[in-house]
Length: 84
Image (cartoon, rainbow, N blue to C red; front, side):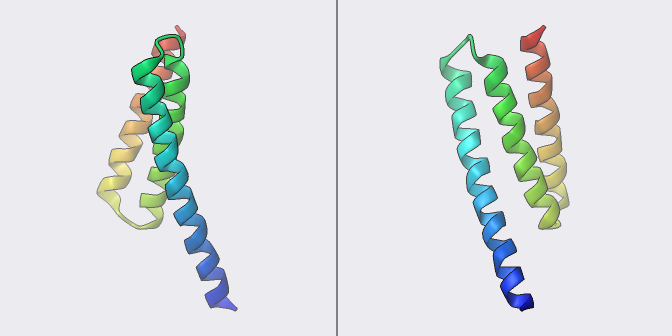
């Protein structure tokens, strides 16, 4: 039974990684193409970085975790910058 739960968690983390990748791709498209939607692009980027930070935290990869936390903070600053 424990193996079944472990496999489900691994599948969920793999799906989260793909979600993080696609969100990053969408945010890059928005940030490079649409000047009016910059705050949305930065917000999607922050969501993507949060997913990757969670994944690196669970993987116990500390340098990557701190890097993703920094990227998340910068993306949130981008949202604030474009909203004001």
